[in-house]
Every structure is written in C-alpha cells, then in structure tokens.
Image (cartoon, rainbow, N blue to C red; front, side, top):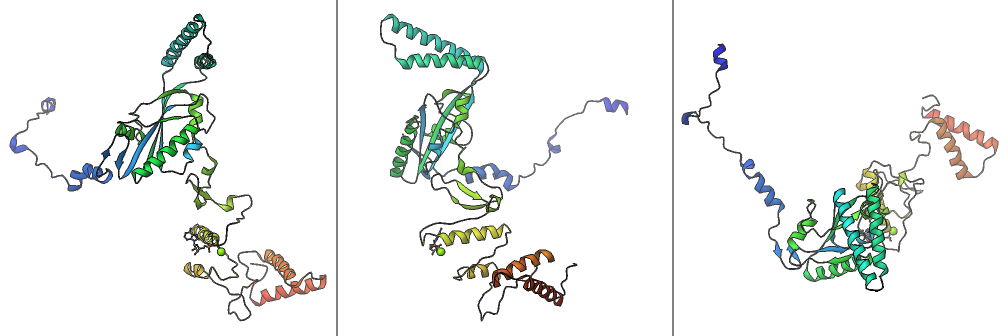
Length: 370
Ligand SMILES: Nc1ncnc2c1ncn2[C@@H]1O[C@H](COP(=O)(O)OP(=O)(O)O)[C@@H](O)[C@H]1O
Ligand SMILES: [Mg+2]
C-alpha cells in the first residue's frame, strides 16, 4: 500500500482512453463573434480628413496651449451645444525625466539668450519670460510642489453629412481658438485619431504637451454649475447651451415653490403637467386647484379624484376630514378656516363654534382620545 502511494502517477493517454470531446454549446461557440457582430460598425470609410462610421467623424487635435490657464478654462469648449466628444489624456511624466528635461531646456534657453546678447540684438521679452517660467517650474518640481504630466486633447466632431461636418469643424476650431488652443486636423491619420478619442484610454495619436499639476487640475471642464442636481430630484429639462440634464427636487430647496414663466402657448402648462407626473411617480401627493378644468383628464388617467366645487355639484371637500392630523391640530386649523369663511369672530362666537365642532365630531364617533 505504501509503495503504491510512492509510485509516480502515470499519465499515459491511449487512443481508446481518450475522452469524448464535449460539443461546445452554440452560444459558447459564437459568444465572442456575436459580441463583435453586435458592437462593431458594418463599415468604416476612411478619408484623408474624415472617417465615416454611420456618422461622419473628424478629429481635431490641440497642438498648442495658452501659457497660463484658469480653473475650468475648458468650460467654453464643453458648453458648445454641438455633436462632439472630447477626449483628454493625462499621463504622469517621471520626475527624474522632468528635471533633466527642464535642465537641458534651461541650458538651451541660456545659450540662445547669450547668443542674442553677443550679437548685440534686442532680446524679445517673451524669451526672457519663458526662461524665467522654466526656472520657476524647475524649482517647484524640485521642491515637490508641482509634477509634470503629458497631456493631449482631441475632439471628435460628428455629423450626419459632410457639409454639416465642415460647419461643425469650423465652429469647434473657432471655439478652441477663442481659448488660445491651436486646433489641427491630423490629415491621413483619422483612424488612429479616432482610436485616440474612444473611451479605451489609448492615445495613439500622441500629440502631447507637457503640463504641470496645477494646469492639469484646471483642465477639468466638468465643474460647471449646471451639473448640480439633487439625488431625489425629477428631470426638469436640459440646459439649452450644453444639453446637460437639470434634475431638481423642489422639496430640497429652502423654499419649495416653483414659478413657471413664458409666453402664452410656450408650454408652461405642459411643463407643469410633466413635473406633476414625474413627482407623482416619486410618490408625492398632488393637489391641483384648477379653475379651468385643465387637469381633469390627467387626474382621471392617474386614477385621481376630481372634486368639482359648484352649487349643483355632487362632490364636496370635507374640511372636517382629519387627513392624518391630530384632533387638536385639526381643530386649530378649522378655527382658522371658519375665520377665513366668516371673518373675525367674537369670543362668544368662537366658543359656540368650538362646541359645535366637538359635537359634530362626536356624532361621527370621533373624539379627542384616539
Ligand atoms: N415640450 C413639448 N412637447 C410637445 N408639445 C408641447 C410641448 N410644450 C408644449 N406643447 C404643446 O404646445 C401647446 C401649448 O402648450 P401649453 O402648455 O398649453 O402652453 P402655455 O400653458 O404656456 O400657454 C400645447 O398644445 C402643448 O401640448
Ligand atoms: Mg397654460
């Protein structure tokens, strides 16, 4: 027994021992190709300065950036209400390489400045400024206050036709130029460029420029006020400028009132009805005072109660309904109700009213003690 255990396991495969291969299930067999089939376009049409995959795409790269940027400086770009995707790649640059790169840059700048001086030429202010900037940056990196990154920015402009694509391209280029970015359409590289804007995190185009941490932080264009929304809110609409959804819960506001303004026929009632329906779906109790019977159909559609208030109406509102209030609370609000109905009451009248309310409730079997 002991010996048997010690024996190495034999692994001989004889033809008759061969296990019958199980047939793969049809789904398993086609799983990968099915996914490819469902997700890939039927055709990609490549052209020197655009690419066609259902829509026409043109990638616009940024090749030059402003010297200084403010936080949210890209806001103007993303707020364009055009059909485009924006892709930013930010890759850390090793500190040692940053330092040696900056050191050789400073040396080069010094040589240039010296050469100009030796020739007796006027030194341009921009060159001096650049030299000072580079020295300051090197200091900050050495002190660990800044880091260097490689950044690239691409925009994928989209349109259903070539003419539209040209139009949107020039608008995007103008917008980029307005924030001091130099746009460039990388000709004969559209496919590579398209892969660089896809959300797969690969920058194959590699039109990078090195930036500091503070400049990288300032890039984030997503810090715009219109993105603020309440988690429990309902969709109110879309920001006309940037198409960002506006989701608000009026009950989260310090004063939950809503005022809708607009020209007549502009869709105010439509907007309110939509809001009511969305609030209703969130479980909010809805009461509408509706002098023009505009909400009757909507109320019926949601199986609500229509109460017609008129002398000949067979439905009434019962102001004595407790509606979840305690007896004492209800009585207080009833006294205010009668004051509205009949004007200011004297002490005696109020006492009589008080007794009447009590006895009315008593008749209905409702007393102060629950
Ligand atoms: N977003 C919308 N989508 C489709 N139709 C709308 C929209 N907004 C308004 N309408 C239509 O426009 C017309 C006028 O809207 P309405 O809400 O009655 O305007 P208002 O109350 O401002 O006078 C209605 O027939 C309404 O159905
Ligand atoms: Mg209206």
